[in-house]
Image 1 (spheres, helix red, strand yellow):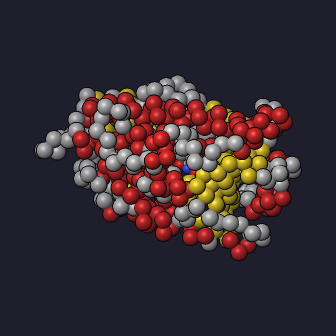
Image 2: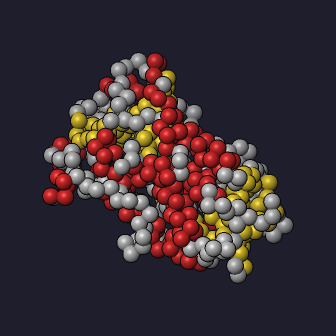
Image 3: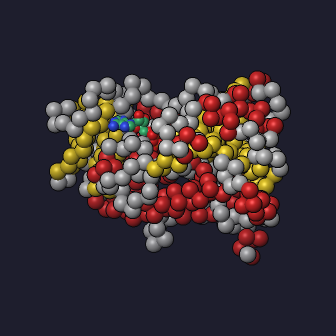
Length: 423
Ligand code: FAD
């Protein structure tokens, strides 16, 4: 292949979904992934209507539904006594936003985008570690060397040149250094994950619900995957060793003691967690510019969140959708794309929205993990919340996050119910 139009650094959910979004417009896209194979590590992922709306537009929603589960309700419970605090009726959410709330194995979602990329003719290269970015007027390039060698910025690796480089290289993004000299921020929390065949769970579980148990310095989530064949569980807690400043933190001994005060249902789930790997929870402070010339950050490279809003992968998918919409809008009849205009439009709206998600996620996590009197106060507040109050979800799940108000809406707004309009 000659020079592509776009080089994407990183073949995670963000990189592949944006590659597909651009390739389906007829652009030539090359993805460079550092790993030996394309794939995802981890378990389930929640996809709210702001994501399933995009999957539908891509023609991928039915496949995603077939591989996942569409639950009826999301329930928040107190992790200590197990009592219900509040809930979201997900069928109601689907009526309001027009698209379902879906839970799916992240490797199934990743595979869906990989297949779509293959069918759309994306050039998919593995063992390509991007080590440096350079640009001249009108072009950008990503320099690569074989994975496993020293990650040194050098001009003697392969040079991939394109009109635009999208850096979707995750939390530890190399490209982010072009824009800001920052570091990941540790939350001192760690996540354990695990999937278990539903027949081996050993306790009754209602797979029509996504459940989160919130407790002092910990929480526990479970929901079904793969049509209900698997139960996905996530156990998250604050590591005392991290708080004490030790390097070796988040280890399984800490998992065992973190949930001693939790209710039976949560403790019965813990033996099913994987104990050979765990995920320390980092985010970064939001930044307001993701574009440096012809290089654009996307996904966790631009906006790695704490996961409490379940929007990290979704924001990455939204990023690619928005980029592609602006390409479509700013492409002339002869195929020439006004890249400066596209990137400016992308940068005008996405950082603003994602800043709000990142900041809300931090506060949301604090609320989940309260102890003592603040925990009791939180519980009173959550129990009194009307379950049909959508003020918390409209700004995230509605389509307005994708475009500034003065730009044409790319999605038909879903009419609110008469009850909502009366409020
Ligand atoms: P990554 O997944 O990090 O992908 C980056 C890719 O780039 C990788 O393949 C990597 O190998 C490659 N790469 C890195 N450096 C280079 C390089 N130099 N050269 C070439 N390739 C490179 N999000 C949701 O939307 N819903 C959820 O329910 C949800 N739950 C979560 C639960 C937990 C416990 C956690 C930890 C996260 C959760 N998230 C969720 C967040 C979500 O997983 C991430 O935000 C999302 O996966 C980010 O995708 P990405 O493609 O931007 O980055």
